[in-house]
Length: 206
Image (cartoon, rainbow, N blue to C red; front, side, top):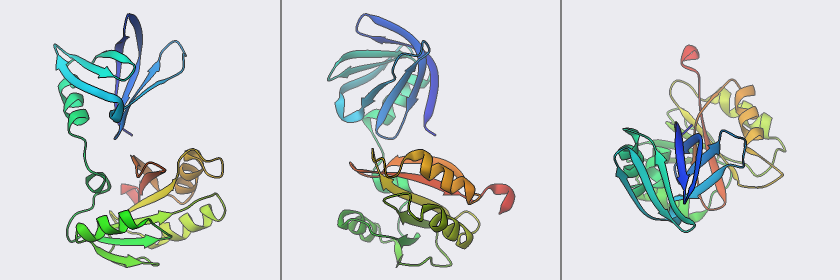
């Protein structure tokens, strides 16, 4: 769900072929030989530049180069100028937002700052974005199914859930969304502790 490219990567003197994936806050590399994937958070990148089709990164663990060709400039720009959370989530003045579940005060302030029209506890019929907060698989499928029946057209459902918890995983959330007839289209690092997965009604059913 991010930007993906098959390329050759150099980590110091080590050279590897694999798949690079640029996410919203990190760069992942999956070696073709089955070695463990490598993750470079943007926060660990001290410098980034594109040179002759190569993305050159200086990280906390040393230098890394990804041979991306014409894509190198684009990826470099995204690393140096990452979008804000509001931009990633599609928040902007005038957008209609419905909140289901509990959310931290920082996110609520962000919603107020973007001057979004806000509805808490139920889905506004004119909602552009619906945020559903969940903390475990308990009642997850039924909650997502009920929410899916209430959204229409291009309305997006963001399911927000904790990172790295056995009580709920990305696969659990993906499964619940798909069982409800929705299509997963994007993943965003919602906070240091939570992830958000975006679902929409398939175009064929709008």
